[in-house]
Image (tube, rainbow, N blue to C red; front, side):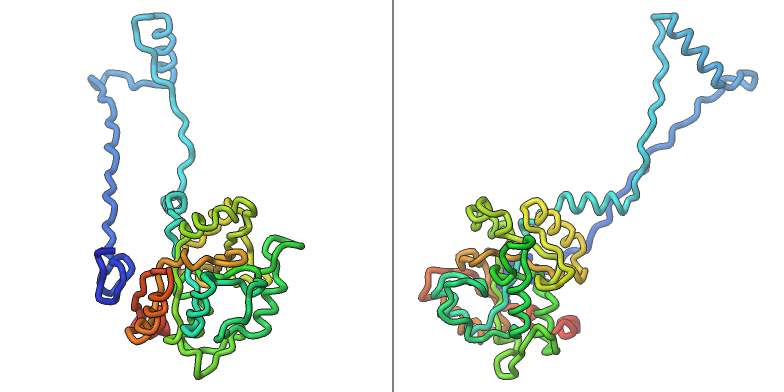
Length: 314
């Protein structure tokens, strides 16, 4: 927390102020080649399979002599790429994976008053968010899709999070491009008018431990849009961990940009560790909202999360 940049971000989060060091190639040391035994003279006969067998029999009859070494059959070698990928997946700490929920700044006050993010199908709603950019068809599709098979809860019964700040749906808002899932209002759908609520997988697992003990599907991972017909759901702890590792092994894949983490029913706001905003003006609007609440997440200005991708690479 002490190593903070001018944007209000921790050092490891801001790529502009704290660029990652260039990777250092691993030093590969070749094993020395075993030298051949030299013949004492040109007349010495070369050892043969027969002479080796004879020597072994002789050694067996003579207790004072050492027995010959037994040949070892080695397992077939795997490719370096396969070993590298397997090792990376096994060593990956999925608990550090950040999750992102995007909401309009005008929705934040009511969220803080409730003390939680509520799922669309949660019965506790008095009135739905002031700004909702999902189309009616999108909401209907998520109410129809189920998480763990016939008879299980619908996707709309879960609070959704992206696994990437560059999620495909959020990119559509940032670039102001048409997306059948979105109903963008020119007067209220500018990316700069939104805030990004950030947490981590390990924070969710710790904060929702009781719910997970009662029902493993309380925290579910998908490998695509949760309302998609081909999307797979990992609704047990083991399956969710495995899917997260596979998604993180390919950080630039379309799967990660469309994947979701779903939390059943509601998400306590105390589990939000960071709030991302686009500029100082929005931060000055957001910070006073927390002054009157018991929540104290870090509010940071990080423009790249709100710009179209082509603008962030210029």
